[in-house]
Amino acid sequence: MERSTRSRKVGSPLFLSLLLLLLIALIVHLSLVAQTAAHRVGVGHTAPNFSRLDLTHRKIVLSAYRGKIVLLNFWATWCEPCLTEMPTFVEWQKQYGSGNFQVIGVSMDDAVPQVIAIVSRLKLNYPVLMGDEYLGADYGGVLGLPVTFLIDRDGKIQARYQGTPLTRIHSDIQNLLQSH
Image 1 (tube, one colour):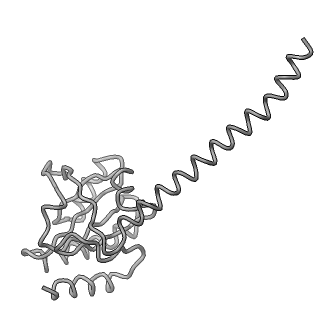
Image 2 (tube, helix red, strand yellow; image 1 turned 180 degrees about the vertical axis):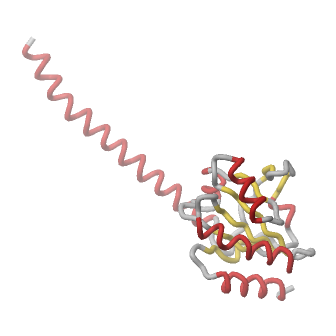
């Protein structure tokens, strides 16, 4: 009887050590996967394609916008900087959207009714679809909001913005519009 108690005590640290090693290996693996994803979606790489329904149930396929410059904006209803920049995106859509430019909003919220309320309140004139952790991961991990990607006519990411002044984004859009 004394021996089995002792063997359980000896086995416990071994089990915990193996569990700790497994946890460390998992963390390292996930870190490498995240780094690989981030490298795939960097500037100059093709933007990951997606197909999702927008809030009006219209199918939005990113690759269908080839030939246009796309401003892909990840946002949320609780994000004050997001809500502050969105009226400017409405203006840019009005100004440049006649055929060469398209804003696409990706809400990272869980609740659709809140998103619909914001879209209505801000009178957004561009498609808004619901995002999730999978779409965010496809774009290298969207960990802080807002995150915006500028995609050229060939579907390549030209810039990733986070905390960037709108004047800089506007200048980059104008440069791309003038380049063809």
